[in-house]
Length: 380
Image 1: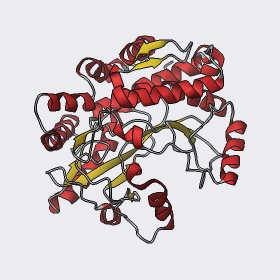
Image 2: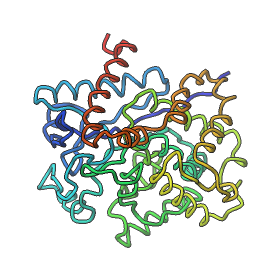
Image 3: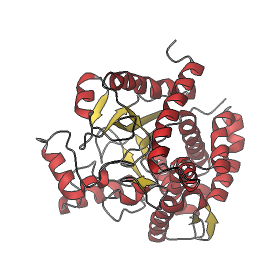
């Protein structure tokens, strides 16, 4: 009998603007007119959330139907969806409030400014067994850099090349600055209570890190893992591939905890693993697939591409068993051709301006989206 797949849900953040690439904030109006869309503190980006789904064949529809409704709404105002995870052609010096009367937004603007004006994809996996959940959190924390590298799509800010592949991750204010590799649910509960009492966290959601536990009543009631590190992924096939790779990794962990839970299988201490993971995340943000990372097993250097290839090899038997091999194919393409940020930087190196790269990518994104909708008969 086949293993049961996990429930999967996505939090999708997007920028809106003109076909020229100029950011135009409309999130308050969108949230008012379109069910399922919500405001971010700066109105240049917005978010929608998909319901939990197990079957991969249903995920594209869940992702693309809200995007299509948003495009239809934007087109009336001669606006569109902008690719990328930072204000590529925007103005990062000015915070544009979506709700000037919201006191929580006051706090966000005063504390972080436009560092938080980014877009990303958060991938949630349903895991109700708390022992499994915290093992999964430890493994994903130690391998999160790989998923950032596959998704990196923010090499620009304010119309210039930043020198990073994920400017978003380098600028986003990770909070609190030091987060442990949680050893158990009770460790997490005690840590959250301590940081709420000290004021380092404003509320239970104010844990902005690469991966975190989530649930209906944090920190006490938890039922899912939330990967937060990925840049915005507009290619649905690649998003499904990244999701499938991570799910296969999690299912493998549940079958072999002693070999895949870093606390049990690493030669490094918990504190060393925390530092290693944070350094890997920064290295991936700077150079993504070209980065040299450190293995959580022994701290030895390993190229990001080699590590991802190794992961693919490790999960392939299970992928065959679950008929998931075709889902993984886009990852091989990224390893060979580069991620979105690398492709954009290559076009800049060939003489295209940042403005031209962004404008052309806006068109390419919509063409790709329409082709996917047609191929999947999503609207039929």
